[in-house]
Image (cartoon, rainbow, N blue to C red; front, side, top):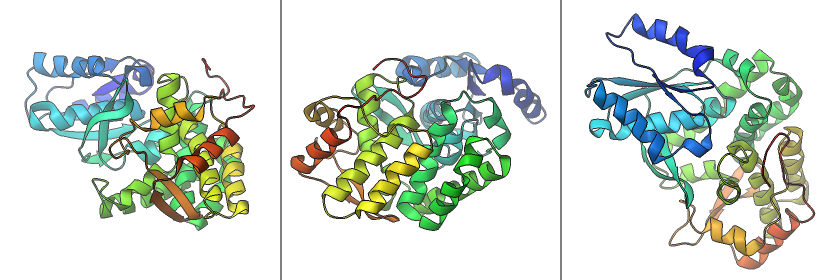
Length: 333
């Protein structure tokens, strides 16, 4: 079982007891918490234990934690002895609705987020919304970024439901959370089933991520949570879609209003457009250094496209100028 220092005291003992009823040996690997530790150094701590304890190809890795733990445990499972099974037990909303579903695994590189990884599907994903009760205040809104994203790109009816449920979701109502997790997993699994390795359709799941990953990399991983950066990135992408003449003004405004209602930032760090572009050029979705964006023709109708610098720079100036771009509780810029 792979977990982190925050989650381990909360849920590891119960899971170890459960696993011990089925496994001859249960070993717990507790890693430091946070995006800043999603690295080769931390990954090697997993391999060190697996090799020291002589785990063979019949072992099972169980990821107990948020997206960072899920991504690292999944990547370790993908490459340890050329691949072993793993199970996801996500304990954050972001992981339950997004990163635990779909088989993307990775670690970060200083030049870019999730640049080193593999596709490796979990055998099972267990999402228990009761674990969300122990989340720090910033984590629940960060998870809602991916929830509303699924509505923006795929299902306006689902977006309507989520928008109506936002007060209940922020209050951690179990029924509303269950609806959101189930609905988001339904949408994401449907996309992944058609395009597991992101050769085409799956790219729509990256709505807001080209901007968001630039913010994360530029600030330093962990200064903004992933969902906070994606929330802001979706507002930027909607603004760019509007400037290209695709997304109607009222729908672009709705994206901004829903993101703000989810208690997520709607303006980015006040960097120059050139700096944003340089960060986007090393994003893993870029082709030969040219960034690609998931934009919206209408709500529920995404489109993947390259764009000219002029409208992109207009968007970056409009969504960062005179901005207090620091999420509540964040440190750094």
